[in-house]
Length: 240
Image (cartoon, rainbow, N blue to C red; front, top):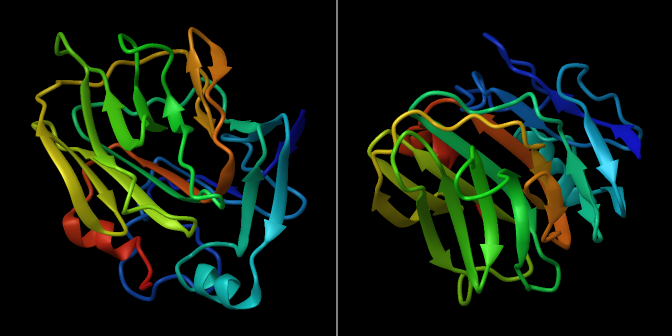
């Protein structure tokens, strides 16, 4: 178990590496941003614990330039059966939220927990997952039933990098890939359920126990306690 980092907490301002967007950055008011570096330097409020087999690698030159240009660090986490644990203290609150993950499955096989604070269907705060050939997002709130939205991975996701976003605006759930909407469902879930499950990158939990590890790479993960605008979601995705 190792403390690692490149974690930036944004509270009422912007903390971004050189090369960030010159225009308005959609991450300006994010609840938390996780990025990676060679040797750590995690934000003290939102550190990540390395659990199991995880390696931190530098992107190739051209990909690194693109990463820096969009506010990244040029580094990524390679999950090889392990995951990253941000602790139990961060919950998305209120009746609007957005989650974002930039990830790839080098084999093209998408399966496992991607970015979550889950525990069970009944107490999920948020969950971005790959299961049964689909990419999905799930929330639980005041409503009797949880809300879930998915899209089929086949024919859409391969072995490259993808920007995955799930948005809850109080009345609908919508899922995006590379800035394009691929699924929307009505869900007036009310205020999101708060839980004491660990927030994980690269896995999810069932009653506190990590399960369904994702074997792949992650460059960045971000949380907002608001619904991003369509234009902001598009701004998160670099041109292919």
